[in-house]
Length: 99
Image (cartoon, rainbow, N blue to C red):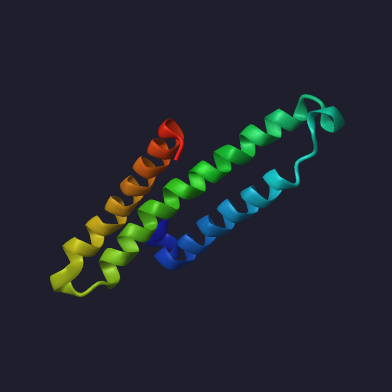
């Protein structure tokens, strides 16, 4: 998709997808108001967030690698993935340990 539409425009679409889904999650009615539709909408919006996050991470790593100087291309490409893995590890550690 990034090759056809351009990496920057696809990155903006995915950021908008994530932001829009996050906003709509905050505005969802309760299960008492909407019934079974509330959890169904919540799962759908969370899937949209996940799709946006995965595409955004991959697209931003490629964009960083393309726009970085030739001698620093490897470092820039790995730093995006390294920071993502570090954030996931920190979040899991915080959840398990509690601090």
